[in-house]
Amino acid sequence: MKFLCPRHRQMFASLSLKEQNDLWMFWMEYALTFCEARDAEKLIAATGSAFDLACLARADHPDCMHVELTLSAILVCRALRDRGDSAQADHVLFSALESLLPDEPCYGSPSGGCSTDECIGVLLDTSRQPEFFTEYLNWPDLSPASPENRPVRVVH
Image 1 (tube, rainbow, N blue to C red):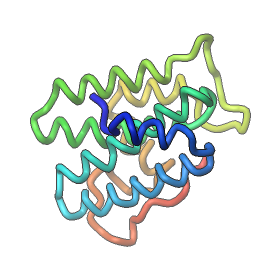
Image 2: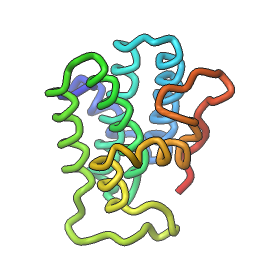
Image 3: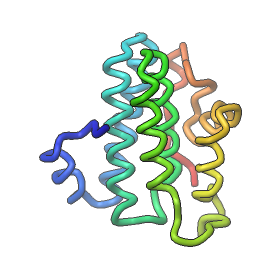
Image 4: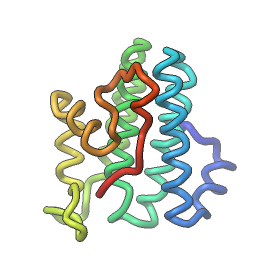
């Protein structure tokens, strides 16, 4: 399942990594707003676009945006499952895992942050996802209800 059309995929693929990260954050800020408003369709569109963008960024920069990819995958999968679309959620999950699988094991990022192996573990173990969200996106849980829980920059 692709959330971005081919034209937008091509356009966003040409952005710098910083611009891609900024756009990812912009979409996730909208995702929080749509989550608070309980607008599932717009939530799926925003988090799906953020997910596709993180996958695009990793194609050119495989050591970057693994946390962003994981965060957006968690949220879009949850929204799809809440809507009753488990097959699409599984497709997103498998796409995320495929993007995160390294050619060789990764034990930590150069900056000492989260490794792709940790991200894979979080995607496969849903009990770890709320804490991952809190740590990296500053959302207290997966269904935030208050405006003061706006996302902040992802910390690596």
